[in-house]
Length: 127
Image (cartoon, rainbow, N blue to C red; front, side, top):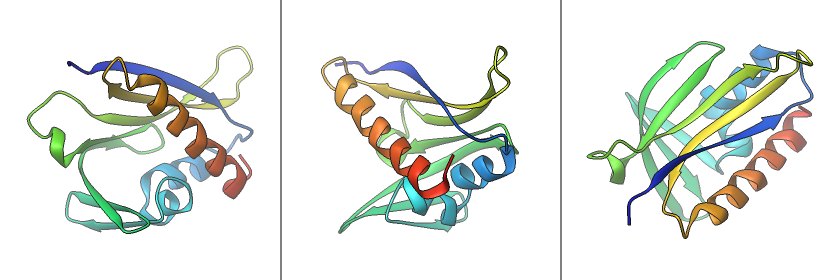
């Protein structure tokens, strides 16, 4: 099955772009909520969960705006995941916009996984 792109937006309780940026773009920040551990070698980020490692290739980023990765097994595809900081027009609050790809029968599970990870982000950082 072909994976399709989807977006999820999470409103956050912070006005600090710098705190959010550090949480989504640095190995230490990512290891606080996204994975148990993160190591970086050149443009390869290795994310560790329990005894499992998964490598993502850094695609691009813009400071205080977004960061994109492509899982190693998706290297020959257009699939990626992106973490983007957005400011909501109505309230002026920050939100984190996640872009990811999933097969239709896996989309709900992947959304639940993102929901869980964002709850960890909120708990660990207070945002």
